[in-house]
Image 1: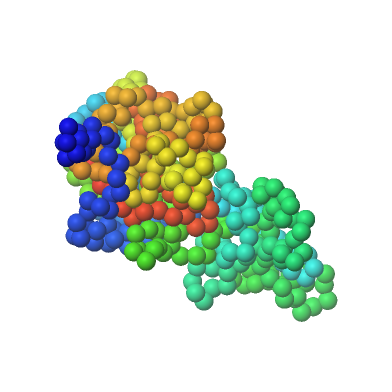
Image 2: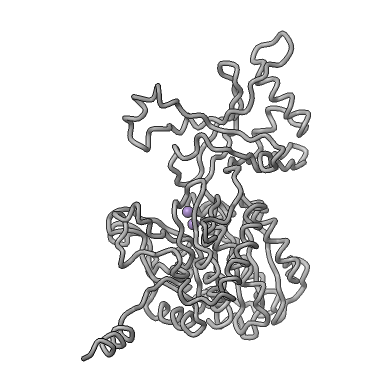
Length: 469
Ligand code: MN
Ligand code: MN
């Protein structure tokens, strides 16, 4: 066989996993870069789960979605949502087929790793005022010192008044930071294991240093409380009923000389929230009912009444069935058993600097498109929701017929580590589920990196799933 024939045969038989940018026209490249601008903008107004839900509600409202409570009954083509305690959200576009035939679901999560304030956060030491924190999700603690931090969240007073806090984002706002030891005196610290270099109880936010002018003790703490009282009308006891989150006070930005990437906080998993939500906005009168989940608490195990382990999602689907006037005993179980889902969560991208933890043939590469994980789990797939081959083939078919660049990979080498998503929770209901999201570098760090091509392919892939599954 001559060289040309052999090359052709290779092309025909190999799984050609090449860089996605190569096959994009200039026009397509422009579409990708433009879409990323909208994403970057959304990210800069939405760093916490509450902010994501409020930004997402705005997008849904602009596209004709209404709160489910405003409908007495539902019909094909209607667009509704339900917001759960301002932290999670379910949206639906009612399909032409009976819901009994199954739903097409895409589910992502709005929460990201961060530092939360403790219930009694404020103290003074050596004439500095600090907030104590308790970290949320899997972080490398040393990454959260010596970076600008902003405070986002709510303080709820006993009279029900809810005060929204957002300080550190505006260029005129002060920021906050957690200090680290100077290298000159860090001989002992530098010998510690990375996990212990910064201890959890040392993640204390520096928030002030001017003493109150008066004859009292704890003058700096008093001065801070006085400022908080003037600004928010609160006293120290009101912090007991607050949810204040520290997030990097760094804007999400376009990255690289070629502008091919996005750098920013919380892309796990807001990149999948944005790409799926904006895809849903393009879905009109689908065959099957399209459901979009924006979950909370994924990073700490999906527990609590805003996490996917709660039954609130089931209640939402039951409510759809009630308002379509088709509900009957056990119908919900049947609906779920006939449903299909993409669990839209980020994937670990291969980082050549740390390639030793990845197996190159089975790791996701930035720029090769949306990344599917057939299974997650750790140590012999323990805890994995392993997608059925039949369903993987269905998803492949949709992506291939719609020219979506995709890659199927796993999270790192065997026995090196592992992870999980919300996939297993929905799989437990009988739904066919596969993890399907965007590969990320520096995952769970204050500044994660993604490829704009993968972001766009995810957006197109989600739309194709809702329209064709
Ligand atoms: Mn995630
Ligand atoms: Mn995560």
